[in-house]
Structures are given as C-alpha cells and as structure tokens.
Length: 376
Image (cartoon, rainbow, N blue to C red; front, side, top):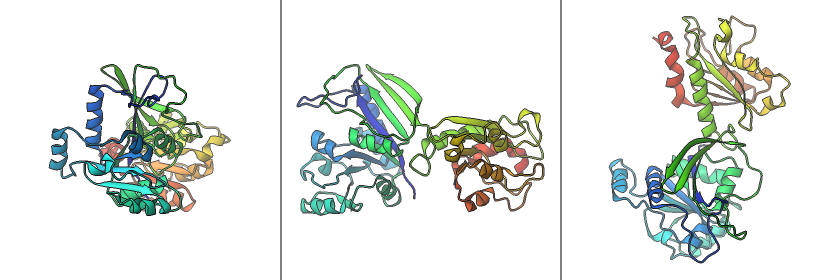
C-alpha cells in the first residue's frame, strides 16, 4: 500500500481562523504569497479540497502562470494537476467552476454518494470508497491508480483536521496573516480531537510581504502510514551519524537513532563509538536506554545499514538486540552487502519475528558514502 506525499496548505489569521462570517471571502494572503501558492500547485500531481470548500468558495483551483503550465507540459506532465474533492453525500453543484475549468477531476465518495453524484451528472470521475470515506483507501487509489506522488491539500479545516488526526500528513505549509477575526462562529483551521504526531518540527520560516510562511513536518515515526516525513528526517540523521564513525577496513560505518512514537529521540549511536572497535550503531544506541522504558515497544529504530543478523565480535547481533528491546519497527537506508558476512539478512530475521521493516533506498547513497573504501 503506497501513499503520495501529502502537503497541507492553509492561510490563517493570528487567532487561527480561516475566514470570518461575512458574505465575502476574507483574503488572508498577499499577492506575492498567491504567486507562491501557484508555484506549489505547479509542482504537485494533484490538488485536493473538501466539498465544503467547493460549495463555499466555488474555486477554479488552477495553475495561473502560463510559464509554469508550459514547464509542466515540457516535462511530460498534464498542463494542470489533477483536481480532487471528497464528499460523503455526493451532493455537489454540477455547475460549480471546479468541474468546468482545468484538466482532469475526481470525486471520492461513499457508495451512496456515488449514486447521487451520477444522478447529478457531475463532470468528473466518481470513485466510491465503500459505506464510509476512508482516507487510506483514497490516498492508495491516488497513488496506485492515478500515479499521484505529491498531493497538495488546500482544505478546508475539516479535511486538514482529519488528515492530521490520522497521521497522514507529511508537511504543513501555514501562512500567518497579520489580522484578528475573533468571531467564535467563524471557521477555524483545526478542530478538536486526538492528533497523532506530537510536536511538529519547524523547517522553514519566510516573510512574504506582510504575511509569514511557516513550514512544519510531523516528528512521529510512521504514525498513520508506511513512510512519513519523520521517517525521512530520522533516516537522514542516521546517515549523518554514520559519517562520524572512525574509519575501518574491517567493519562498516553505521549510524542509528531510536525514536519514540511521539517523535522524542530516545538515543543515538554510531559504529565504534567511544573508542570500542567492535561497537555497532544500534547496539550503542540501545545501550543508552533503560530496558524497562515503556516507550521502546512503540519506538522505531532508524539505521543507515540493515541491522546485522550475525556477528563474531559479540554474542548477540543487532537484530537480536532490537528484538530483545521489544522494538517493533525498523527503518533502514541500505541492505547489508556480503562484504563481511555472506547471506546477511537482518531484515528477514526481524520480519520473521513480526517487526515492521521499512527500507528507504533513496538514502542508500548517503549511507554508503562513508563506506566507499569497502565497496570497491
């Protein structure tokens, strides 16, 4: 099951409102930021809004720059990103601008909503998801059936809240406008509820005329999906730790980080840490954590190299140490080659014991870099 990269985009007032209660849409952004949003739209494969936004704002949801559209076509992509909306009821105005501008459109709905959408003859592809809306099924369909790798979600607040609660967002791009709404009945960006992901990580702030763009990534590993932005972040950290290892001609340089379910770093380590020529990265990291720490059961071990299944320098290989610690999820950048141990399969050992093992091959080159002298 694969999902696209999910980017949430919104503009809010200083007190967290998306709009006021007046008849006209409250403009929270600035001309320069509207152009930035257009640039982001041009970079993605699909843009999603909720049915409430279709009804309230009647948006066209286009890429407005001719140059950006031309660049998409030159790169072999559609002139406009796929336009996506979600409605449980299927009750949408067939004359809305959403259906009659831009390129392809798709409506995700329930089985009952699909019947209503077809009665209304909406100018779109209608995809029923069953008796209820299922965000994981929706994202899987976008990825596997429509080829969507990057999805921009422009709201409204209900959609953003549902995706964050489910731990399905990779990034939040939030624009803060210098005004206050102060109307309790006005729509807010996020609603109440149990959110997965804990504290978000601020990765960028940028002043754009009189507004401020803030970009955040979730920190919780694998909260609601197979691979998250947090997984990519911690895998990068593990690869950076590998570069700190004292060089060796008889062992790989490896970095490892252990991260709790709420995104808290529990420990990190790297090969030959502390001057021990036989220390492995996962071993060094786990040794810094109290074995009775209840957070281990829901933690993730990130390692730049697949945890070893066999070793001669210690009684227990790293895969066995991970199992003994009770960790049930491991993310690694690179499968161990047969340089020192033939038929190495730490991932197989872990998976055979019920551990969720994820490999991120896009980080293999970074993991291999401090080991080039061993790879020929």
